[in-house]
Image 1 (cartoon, rainbow, N blue to C red):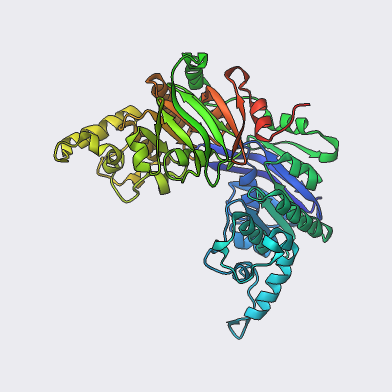
Image 2 (cartoon, rainbow, N blue to C red):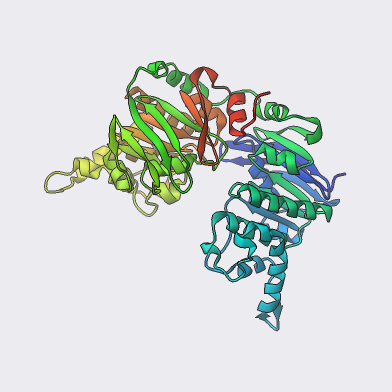
Length: 508
């Protein structure tokens, strides 16, 4: 029996199966890689182990003891700590206070700040070389540190718990190479002391440098468990790939069969050497009626590009042209004025007015188009516009005056799409638009994309589902650490090619 065993793990999110009988077995003192393509279920499996996500079914044993992890406190009680790419730091507290959140010492009900500071300093000492001038910023406000140093504090906070199991889920994604080496030194020290480290990274080079064995997930199931000393990168990619399938394929064929691929249609959007805080020298073009897929593992710059084009992120340099004319877009209002629409990744926080009715959510971005001088709106026209969008997208609602949050997730997402259809956009930016909605709602959104392209709209499409991306895109540009590293032409659109490009695997 292994030190950690997870067996028969199942998890569904509505109609989406994230895990279907997945498993993981790892030993004390091992650095064990958990890898897979986008949507394979690796983050869900990690979050089930750490109590962030509750499984539909699972058997978990640690050191021979079976236990249930229903919340993060349960994981902490069993010596399981985790670090994710998304930080959980309190930005207004000091570095010491954030690290000490793992183990605050009290005496007679009072915090022992001196003790906490000494313990935080001891833990952070392992990571000293990753900070500027190798000085530990114990009293600095965490929010004032660069992203990489904040990530080191996050890792130190987890290490301070003295865990039996440490889960690092894309924890090195925001680190530069010298900081990664600092973290690897700490991982080796922990594993030598008997800590099991579960390590997930989009960089296969890191996997081979620090890990002993790997469990490969594909579509929520285990595709293989391998000793990394016995397999090459190409073998891992083959395990991750599987067969191309999915609801996007049939609708995507309609899109792919259009005449965009012959490169004869005019360029609608051209981006040249665009740089932001998260992007570096990004250049691409999208033609009328084309779906350009934004590939790569999650968080490599795809969403950052869409936000920059919509004016939500500041440009440091570069240029943008629409239909051959240079445009300056520094605010979302300007983007809308130029005919650019964004369907964001977080519909609740960024795509909807959650306390307002369905009607307002559908009509607000396009109200000006229907206003009569001097800016007078007609309730009848607004109602008719909302009803038209509802019909086009088959939105299921009771009354347009109902709150938008009374709708199902899929219908909420249709509202986000519908409000932009009413603006008659030239360019539509889709940031993982089918995340968290059921299969039928996905198919309906795919049909909307097909109609948009038939009308000549240029679409930039980011998806966490590789099958969906391949099924709907004419071409795919692959992002890696904020840069476009490869373009996959229509005749080369295979899952194997996409995964290899996403992981920057060099062909033998």
